[in-house]
Length: 114
Length: 111
Image 1 (cartoon, chains in turn orange, brown):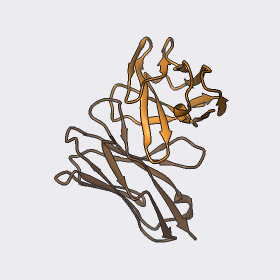
Image 2 (cartoon, chains in turn red, yellow):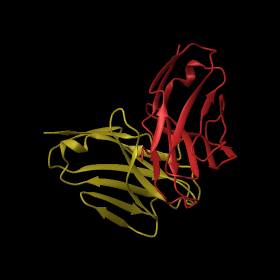
Image 3 (cartoon, rainbow over the protein chains, first blue to last red):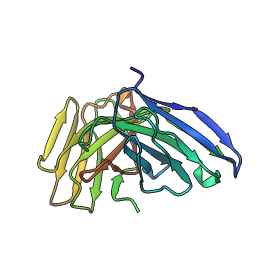
């Protein structure tokens, strides 16, 4: 049981490039989400999904796309990277529709946009 | 605009001392208040959580105190150990999955 996995661990992009951050979980969790972590700002929700085929926007969705074709995977796409997207990105998953359930976080992807 | 305000930004405590981190919120609809612990290079992990119908919850050396009327809650780390050195985040949500996080507190425990 690997939990929540994220790839890559580190990535450097040039402004305007696109890329996909991968997230997978093997706990059969319905709920998955993406956060970005910036110094002095805590974690901010980008997008989330309550099940396969269902996604919705969080607090800071601009510049990011998501899709959820399977229960296990929830990739985050940067369409045209900007320096403001330099951050550490965390994927999380949770077991059920009860918001009291623990959210399990992956190890993060550190992204630098030049 | 953060919905949960956390202080202090950082603190240093001697081994065996007490670490106290405070959080305040405005939205009275919040009904779940978890604390997350994050070590360098790792993702956050749930440490302890509380519902607003409880004024205090204790798990080992970690205690959450909750003051509903003041809209404040705090984390106390008793008998702080070097292994407790980490960043701590308070958070809150309202009957959904969207956690609102505080800015984080970096705790350093000196041996």
